[in-house]
Image: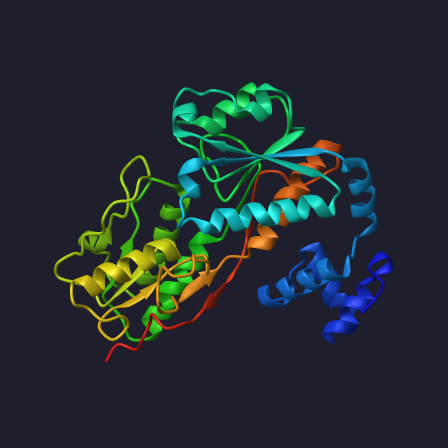
Length: 338
């Protein structure tokens, strides 16, 4: 493998057996490269230490910066390992850029009172990444009261203009629903309390689009709540009559649904098929693999850190909402409808 300090695009191309043009398109975000190949190229580029000339200049300017990371405590329950993984990827990306990361966990009580995080109040961070949407308009408050760069990660707020990085929840749920349709399912429910988060609602809309294209009516009784208006988890109540499959807004909720189905005497996937979202679940929560949409966590972290550093150093960047694509991963929780 090439020397990390002198890695070129041609070195990456040689390792993967592809053209340098393909590598260039993947690293610059151009069209014409599949999402899976793009992810492989970016991963190998990181492993080999590839940096463009613009990145080298930007990193020199940003080196030594303190990147604050704010995560609402509600997302750090034992089952929400997705957010820990996202945080770890942010730390790894910041370290590559010779930057430091400072973590602060936001309590609901502090968010309700609109108290500034210590990272901001004590001027400890040069910029901040918020992972997961806080409650009570907290993100908008922070943007208004803190005059340093902010990036939202894994959420966006339609009421304010902000730089955000999210996964493609709409298309992911659309793919998952179409997968169930391809298996012969026509009675498909959705698990997720609408409007509690943008991601849950976006994924619901992807689910509805897939059904509408097949002229399958949306049945409100098959849209099942999984949390209350404050975002706290509820027990999942199964509808009656039952559909033959469910699209869940994340893998954790899918694991809870599978447990509930089994308690009620249903077999997964023989009786009911279940799909999730994220491709990330704490070991031990489910004893079968959940068919899911894999979120590109490293790419989300890379985009967020790059966006923040561009803002810190005054480099041009694409502002607003940025979205990463993933891919379908078929496991053990789905089966053909007989």
